[in-house]
Length: 446
Ligand code: NAD
Ligand code: UGA
Image 1 (cartoon, rainbow, N blue to C red):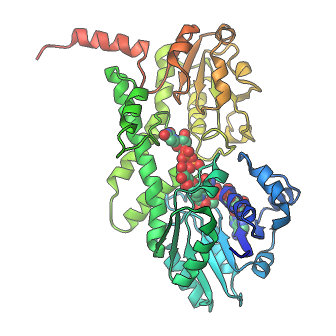
Image 2 (cartoon, rainbow, N blue to C red):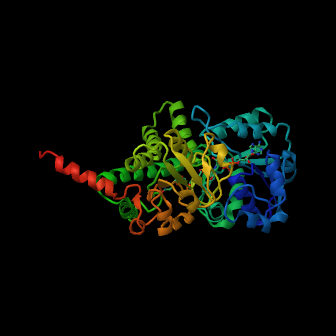
Image 3 (spheres, helix red, strand yellow):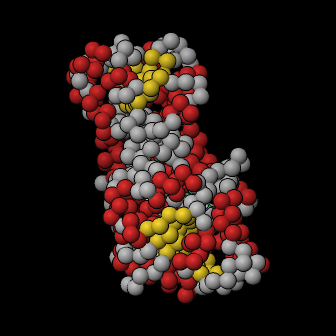
């Protein structure tokens, strides 16, 4: 396809994946952010986030990428502009659209013909509101397209190159055509819809994914009580072609910059429209409770956690990202501190850890340093480095050789063979087996 100059507003995960992805397809891309340090770093070839492969792809396409603080630089060069600014949650659980409106309001007086493409995740109805505001400000010549983003952190570039689908929702078919054409080289299915449906596809997709996670976590919790193994159970469920194997990993629940806020935003959107979204409300509640169950597992083994040292292993909300937004480690770390535990944290890429834990955690350089003399190792994020824990040297370094695996990443047989006490999520545990046996003995015959 012919080269089309592209603009990108916002240089976070979505903006950078979009910008480098389109640059790699041969387009010139101008990226605007409002954070001077971010723009300076990117202009110097330094990527400010941890996303595998991004630095290399940026380097390979440097001659087609330009970073700027000025919106005018984007407007001068591009006719298609992707909006990739953040839409975090407000206190009321809705999406904070101030950055989106900031961008739209900056277009005032723009006489050029252009298409604004919304990649940020926004509530259903946002496109309609933006369209109205543009029209009221004499910007009827500015087109609007909803093109929600489905990438996951850690695999952002692969997701750009090989998406399951591209959704293009438009008011005017010609605007949608121009955006769809950009994706044609990717050979992905392109779904054309109206704007509201495109917006809903994004929110509903994330809602479906979190529902699966809370579902499998509840099945795991029941497995613990009845002596089944969630790993086998999930495998068995996933082999049903109607259900599939994805998003059935039981653990301490979902976190991240999107799932928590998008689930909450959809719940609020429904409530504001007069509908109580009961299923989603339960999914969110299950996730909140799930994070805390591992604290009880620690108590079951150690009694009071006051004065006990717990190694908090992995701080980011998932491996292969440095994103700490809504990471379960934040809840777990502060719970443990509140229980009087000494928390020694390790993560290979998380930054500004002390800022995230104002009450203070000790920081370790390596997993081994974190568990040295500890009463328990709590795996919060399944960084591959943590498989190295399963060694007798590590067992001997701990005060109590207890591993609580919040992500079911270790092999229980190997861990126990190495001399550890091992607790996971939804997998048979020595303690639960004992408990069930005593319950069965005391159960009255009916
Ligand atoms: P982010 O917070 O990492 O990045 C947003 C960037 O926008 C920041 O660098 C910020 O400085 C910049 N910004 C804010 N106002 C601006 C303005 N007026 N002009 C230019 N830049 C501005 O956000 P993200 O994680 O990339 O997410 C962006 C959007 O995409 C959100 O709506 C999110 O829900 C959605 N999304 C994110 C992901 C993901 O995995 N991170 C995946 C799919 C969708
Ligand atoms: C998620 C979606 O996967 C993307 O499709 C979506 O575009 C993105 O949110 C978004 O809207 O921002 P991401 O948050 O980067 O992407 O990461 P995921 O791999 O989905 O993991 C999210 C959380 O769910 C993590 O805390 C992870 O540990 C947890 N998770 C995931 C589980 O607990 N179990 C699973 O089976 C899968």
